[in-house]
Image 1 (cartoon, rainbow, N blue to C red):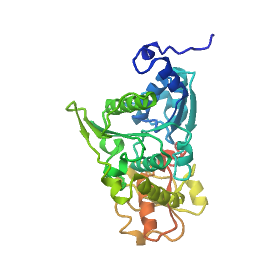
Image 2: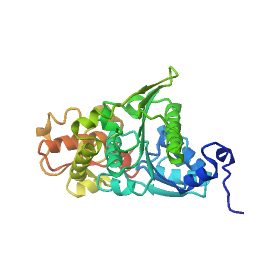
Image 3: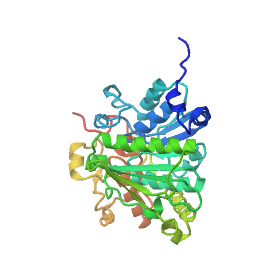
Image 4: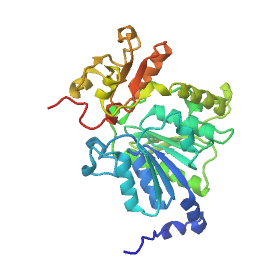
Length: 364
């Protein structure tokens, strides 16, 4: 068969694109963090548009509950790594582009080096810690970042240009909230099309930046309510927020340095038995109903994340590994406990979702 030649004619006819714009896209390198509800439309539209190199970061395996909104995948892929499934599907869509995959979450020790390899980053995770880490890395490496989040029928979109004098995520919300405060798809539910809409908007903003197309100059936060069919722009004043604490770059540097110091909090294991063999006592910080629905097959203690800081005296001596479903609650709890002087507290990176399938559940 002859080699596939993409047809971008519908796109190159646009004023502001043309052959010169298409060449820009072919030379562009975009990193997409999260290949879920937001990431799927971002990846599909950027690949279809002819962005030359796409990086995909996702440590999760496909779950059946993902399929109603994550349209890159099908039922045959359940249990497989999303980055592998996404790369295969994108290659089928446009075999002329280059794809790099990262099957573990980025962390403070490598995120700046990875960002430096790309022209633009699109943050599509359902993880507040990832958003703040990406914001700080974007500001310190001067890499434009497109953020989006969803809550049930609503969404938010922010473009962090990372240029001097322009606002960042911390200008609006200086400190990362505790897990569960903002909610997630697992906890709050989501209509499948909502992340599709916000992801398509992220892809549009990415293409506008890559093609130097006109954009609003106010760097506002866009609020979208899909039940009401309404949108609102919330202005961000760069003279306030981070500016009150030395500016976005200084705040990001301090936060980034702190994150590097905390890097050893998150530990990856393929199996919980490996963690026990390494000398860790397991503490399950999920709620009782979660533990009952998905019990562990190995010895562990239970102490909910909502109570763990006030009951820290009940933690066992020696090295402790906190466990939750995704690693968010356990990671947040571990960092706070370390702040109390408990240096042997760690968190299972990626939570139970990161483990080899079916090896952390009770048989039967």
